[in-house]
Structure formats: C-alpha cells, structure tokens
Image (cartoon, rainbow, N blue to C red; front, side, top):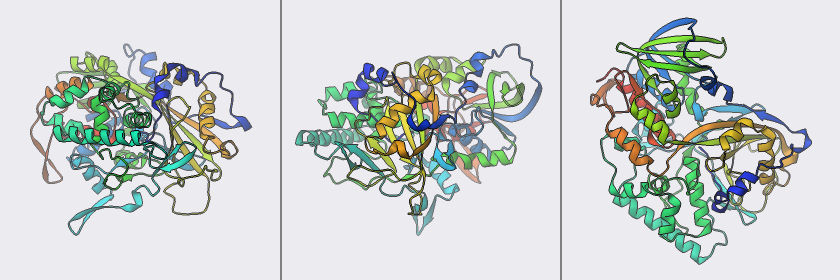
Length: 560
C-alpha cells in the first residue's frame, strides 16, 4: 500500500505514539480540509442496523453474486466474464469499486486513495501478467515481453531524508559506518540463503493451491516475530532495523515487532532480494504507477460491469445465507434507504474475513476461526494540494516516493507526488499523498473514527516542514482518507493457520475453458455454494494475492 515507513525507535515507544496526537492545534492560515474517500458510517451500518426482521423492498435474482468490489471481487467478475458467464451482480459498499486501490482527486488533480503502485509481476503471478497484457501494459515483441514505459515510474523513483539531507534510495547509506555496512551484507546473505533453502512464492496462494505444505524453514520463521529473529541473528544496527521496519509496514501495516519473521523475509525473498551497497545488484525493480495509483487498474476492471449494469455501489451487505438450492443476500441501499434481497445459485464472498463472519448466517468454522485469529491494521492517507513546487533541502532531486528517516508523525511513512509522471516540465500545482500505517498505534481505529481531521493534519504538516520549510505557505487544502481495517497483518502463526485452511479447501476440477484455452483452477476456501476470495486469506494485502484469489474463485464457480 505505502512505499515508505518509520524508524524502529519510534515504533517501540507507545508513549511517543500516543503523545503524537496530543495537544494538536488547527493548522495555520485557515487551511481547508476534511475527511473524504471512505464513508465510515456505511461500514458501520451492519453493526448499527440489525439484519433480522428487515423486510426487503424488492427481490432480485442473478446467477452469481459477488459481495465486495475490491481487487478480489473485480478479478472474480473478470474471470466469470472470460468464461462467458454474464448473469452476475457485484455489490460494493462505497460509491466506486476498487477497495484499497481506488483513486481520487483533490483540486482537480488525480491522486491515489490507497495503493499507489504495482511491481512488475514475477512468473508465479501469471494471472496478473495476463491482466497487464489485456490492458495493453505489456506485449511480446521479437519473442520478448516488453512493458509500456509510459506507465513505469519515472526516475528518480525514491529518496530518503536522512541526517538533514536527501539521499537516493531508501536504505540509509550516507555517512553510515563500517559496522552498519557489515550488517547490511550479513542480512543480504541470510535472505539469499533462506530463499535457496525454501522458495518464497508471490502470490503465496499459488503454493497453497497446489497443496504444497509449509516447509520447515517457513514454519520456523512463522513461529516468532521478525524483531525476535533479528535479535537472534545479532542484527541490531539502528539504520538496518529502521529500514526493515519500513519494509514491514510497506506491505503489512505494522512493524517488525508485530509481524512474523516469515513475513519480514518474504518481503525481500519473494521479489527483489536485499542488496547491500557495493554489491553486484540488479537494477532497481520497475514499478507501474499512475497519478491515481492503482485506481487506474481498478477502474478498468470495473468498467465492463458498469457498462452492463452489473455493478451496484453504495450497498451494505446485511445478511448472506446459504441454502440447499442457492444463496440469499440482503443489502441495504444507502441512496434509497431500502433493503434489496438478492437470490442466486452461487456467491463469491470477496469481503474481509471479519465482515464475512458477521454477515454469514451460520458461518463455517474456518471463517469463524479466521475472524478470531487475524488482526487488521488501520491506515490513514492525507492528500495535500500544493500550489507550487516546494523548497527542498540539499541532496537528491525530488522523487516519486519521498521518505523521512526521523519522521515524528505517528506511523508516518512519507509521501508520493501525484505529479511525478507528468511530462510537462513547467512548475505546476500537485498533490502529495502522505501515508500513515497505524498497526502499532494504540487505539488507532477508535482515534480514526472520533478525532477531528485537524488532529491528524498538524503532526504531518510539522513533519513535512523539516525537509520543506515553506510547506505551510504552499499547501492550500488537505483531505484525509481513513481505513479502519485496511489490511490483515501477518502475525506469528498466521502462515501456518491459513495454510491449513488452504490445504483443506474443497477440490475442484483441474481446469476450465477460458478464451478458448484450458486454464488450471486452484482451490480456494469454499462451501457448496460459496467461494471465498480476499487477500485476508493469504494473511497480508498486496495486489497479486487479491487478484489471484479473486480470479480463481471466479474460475471455480459451477465446478465441483
């Protein structure tokens, strides 16, 4: 979701985290702003509005229902369409599909509301590769795959504000000593050795879907926190530990003291590895990004559904029941204030696990257990409309991803510049999207729901004024998007628990006809008439996991 993070010492101090929001004053200059992008009251409709006893205003029927319009739900709808199944209805809580990958705009400038990039997928993520080809983002030329460079992140890609200056890249290197460099090299060797001992698959659901048990190497890493494992290895260097905390928050929303060692290693071993300065390292991996972030992808996934009248937004799922001959779903329409009852032969439940457990009538044991076992990280994304380029401290040039090593904001993760992909070199207004992963902040969810937007605005304005002293003169509006349950956190034991559910998933036929070709189908958590598709079932939230799970849930509809 975010491509930046916070230092370890800050994460370890609950007093600092709790105190970062205390005594806040309203921003100067009468700065306009507020909350936008997520309607928290809709998310609480199920909690505040009992499902029992509500008479539906009308009844509608379809062949396949999809509950949830995030990446997994949209991927499931696409798979059904590719199979020729077009009697489909997708229900989404917000006014636009896309989940954590939606895009927005501030002052007419597009910006991401959540996830803002997609790394070029590896060979295991073949479903995502096919999607990129479908969208014209990659094509085969002279026998080799080439990516449309217009959609790749422009250089410079990332920089770190460290020791009062900007440096290229996010691993602290400027002015660090020999002991730090030695620990960098040692950690790089450990990542390489563990990757050889037991491959780290992305998406992980590919390994589980092929009925491969968790290796002893992964089991050992899954048994303890990443911080504990680093302690055991004698890796205690502050710059290294800060960077590894950053990496955990990048994908998981919480730091190394909470996520498992498996997750901490997986971040590197499943994608680009870890390379110490001076080592022969491959070129920095390319990422796809757009001003609106991954909203560019989700809007294209949603477009066919909108055109066919199959996308129903502003709907809270109240109840979902599975019967002998079909499923029944009651949804509250926030525009009309009425309840619609949907009936279908099958349903794909592309909802977060804790929501699925709440709406399902008599949920299966594996859903109930997962809802009790998993934990979720809250997030905040602040969008700052800037009327002109900011003053900059010395060092590396402005980049797409800009991270503060000593960010004093609770969970502060730095910002991305929505104007970085702009081809026009003339100075112009832009939007900076500043991320905060709040998985380590005490009572973060309650604070997000109850604190005024100014309480969140002031600390981040103070933080960004460190590298940009004229920030308060340049910002004209600040809008904040809140996610109470943004992503599942891979705590110790999560890998083993979810892999057992995957290994017990109901078997399906091995392949289906897709675009005239046979396509293999991986099993997903399922019952007779329900198939479950959400990145929660992998224990962490990245595009590749959500899309692959949704795709195979759609392929499995109607099979044994």
